[in-house]
Amino acid sequence: MTTTTTVAAPRVDGEQNPLRAGLPSSRITDPCTIVLFGATGDLTMRMLMPALYSLRVHDMLPADFAIVGYSRTQWSDDQFREAMKRSIQQFGADVGAPEGAIWDDFVRRLSYISGDFDDVACYESLRKHLEEDLSEFQTRGNVLYYLATPPVVFGEIVKHLDLAKLGPEDTKGWCRLVIEKPFGTDLVSARKLQSQIERVFSEKQIYRIDHYLGKEPVQDLLALRFSNVIFEPLWNYRYIKSVQITAAETVGVEQRGGYYDRAGALRDMIQNHVINLMTLVAMEPPVSADADALRDEKFKVLRATRPIPAGRMDEFAVRGQYGEGEVAGKEAPAYRSEPDVGAKSNTETFAAVKLSIDNWRWGGQVPFYLRSGKRLKRKNSEIAIEFRNVPHRLFGEMGDQFEANSLVVRIQPEEGISLSFNAKYPGQAMHIRTVSMDFAYGSGFGTKGAPAYERLLADAMRGNQTLFTRWDAVEAAWEVVTPVLEYWEDTRAKDFPNYAAGSQGPKAADELLAREGEAWRQL
Ligand SMILES: NC(=O)c1ccc[n+]([C@@H]2O[C@H](COP(=O)([O-])OP(=O)(O)OC[C@H]3O[C@@H](n4cnc5c(N)ncnc54)[C@H](OP(=O)(O)O)[C@@H]3O)[C@@H](O)[C@H]2O)c1
Image: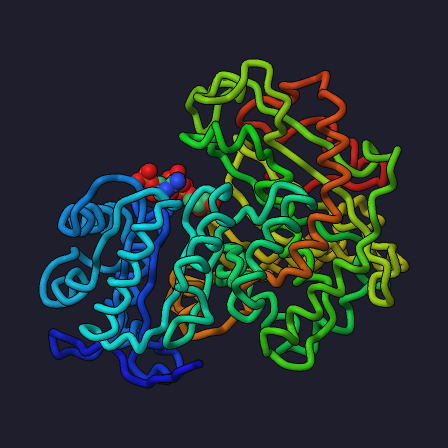
């Protein structure tokens, strides 16, 4: 049962929020209880609670909502509320201090359950919380379960919700499940997890998060492609020479060595975020902006992605692991010296793959180069469309080195779009230089978009699945990367560590492109 509402949480201070004034009421979410599994964890503290409070401050939550936290730490409701206040103080940007009437109204809606995720009594307690929220906060029985927990317990939680009759069949209103990444660790485990979940929740009730898709420039890529006529005619193998998608970080594994050492860059970044970006670049225009129309087209790209030939993995995929070095003027340890990482770890902290798409638009002729790594020279996520050269050079006899056009969508840290083209350098001689037109979000519109988690939480509450990954695409992405994962697991990397912290990445990655006469964009 789906309910719609147009009522925002009342401005308890009686003021209109100028930022959101004039916002269509359809943007306001449905009344509901949000159940945060993993309520003491890093994700809840750094992202989810600050995002929820920001939604409240910006009038994007309905008048009727409640939040229940659930994890093992023995906290009372008040201790949970205090911890959430501290997390908002530390990580909440642009929301002001959590105090005053808005905070008082928000905090009284928070409650907490402590216990293990397989403790039947806790699910009984959860039922009571949901019933109380229904009568006290008018949540209409709508429930959003958010699994911000270690992935190993995703299936367990769903099973217990079902056993306790707290699943979609039994709730009074709508019932949705938001699942964090990673969805499985390979094709087999992803299928197993899916089969556990689909026994209880239908695809329309499952929201698989890829927070990259919530970022403003990623959605702007869709606007760029499908609300302009000037790019689409060029968007094919005839005019595009290659596509480079980069997700580069300067940070190492920080406190997450235990998790990362079992995952690696291919699983952690390429299988989900980077491949998702590739599908948005490569897909056909959807028939509408409807979630399934868009996700149909994304899935078709993955179906057309050519499998990496067995026995030739090294020609299509390379890996790296950082040794010690210097990042932003500070000494950085080698990966193998990070906390909770094995001294002989074979885990890659850098991965690059070359993929081809066999369909009418790309003809298998345009390499899509995807790379992601930690402890690189600069934090930079971007999509670069490299166009072909002019067919005949009229200019450039004077030794000018002008480049083919490129279109770059910058995702982070700066958000914007750059188009590079060639122009005449002033003077009597016909010298050509490459110049660029830049659009930056902050200065371009004078306002910033909502952070990714705010947007995704709000979308899940209003039942919009557009920015969430559908099962068929998750499965297809695992089909692309699993042969590489298996090959890397079977063959130890002999040259690890093979790039210094703070560098551009391993030499092998340069060689991957050099074989095609290409080079990575410098970080
Ligand atoms: N952190 C990030 O920046 C980030 C980014 C993207 C995706 N994610 C994903 O988000 C999820 C959570 O990550 P995280 O970094 O927040 O992990 P975390 O800091 O380790 O937190 C895990 C949470 O789950 C609870 N928990 C674990 N096992 C439990 C059990 N058996 N019973 C009850 N509670 C249990 C913990 O409770 P106690 O501590 O009280 O025991 C804690 O609240 C993961 O799937 C991760 O891949 C995280």
